[in-house]
Amino acid sequence: MTRRALLVGIDTYQAFRPLAGCVNDVAALLPLLSRNEDNSRNFYCQTLANVQRGVTRDELRQGVTRLLAPGAEVALLYAACHGVDRNGTVVLATSDGTRESPGIAITEILDAAAAKGVGEVLIILDCCLSGSAGVVPQLGSDASVLRTGLAMLTATRGDQLAGESTDGRGVFSTMLCGALAGGAADVRGNVSIGGLYAYLSECFGVWDQSPQLKANVTREIIIRRSRPAVPVEDLYELPDLFVTPEYELPLDPSYEPLAEPQHEEHQRVFGLLQRARAAKLVEPVGTDHLYFAAMESKPCRLTPLGRHYRLLAARDLL
Image 1: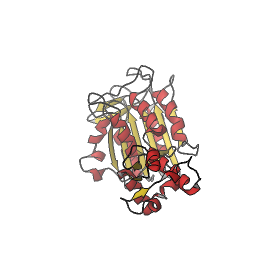
Image 2: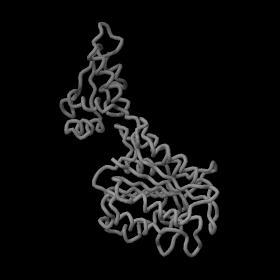
Image 3: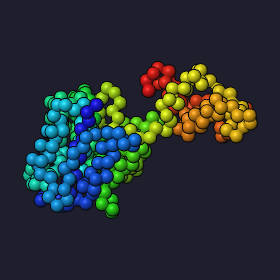
Image 4: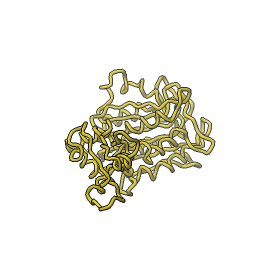
């Protein structure tokens, strides 16, 4: 699958105060989006981020055009910059922008995304007022107006400012890096757009900036793959071990690794159960630890999350 990403960070402006974290944020995100945790290729990334020279309107427009050109199945635009409101539409300010014409309106980018042949488009904005993208025509109250396959994750509501930390980073983008590094991963190690939002929304209190997600997608969009909490081959064994979702698997001391005589199959299964326990898929019954469940010949069972993954495995949906 061909995946492109354009990472934009603009700290320098002619008409607006300088920022301190946007270029740094691009530098931090680049390795996370370029490669998955196992070092396999993720997105083919290009950056527009220069502390001294900045990024002009023409450079940003050309970059977006190239990003959305036919040939990619997934295109991701990340932009960290000033966000300026003009007639209810957020404008991404560029280094050569003026107060009257700050840069490129998000509506222009959404129009380009709707017209191009890229299957799925992801837009992540770390800028002030970025949530006002929700009031442009493409994102009206009727969700079907947003083209299928487009998702937008913003750092703030339309009436909020995006914060920078004292160490030269955007607050939202710092949390975003933590999410991509595995904090937002599911049991299989997949970091999806929905997982990103769930993680990020928990990072801010009720008095803080509030990340927003707007999407019209028909399937899960994976942003990055990190180390799985449970290998997929273990997940596929769940229907065999737990013959029904409510089944309680009996354990005994032969499952314990130090038990004598050694029972290799039971000990292999016990290792699988311990990994599933760490991922909150399995729980012991009548005790707090799997070790004591085995030593006391008590059973274990699937948690609600474990029953979910058992169902996926049984239906070959992993």
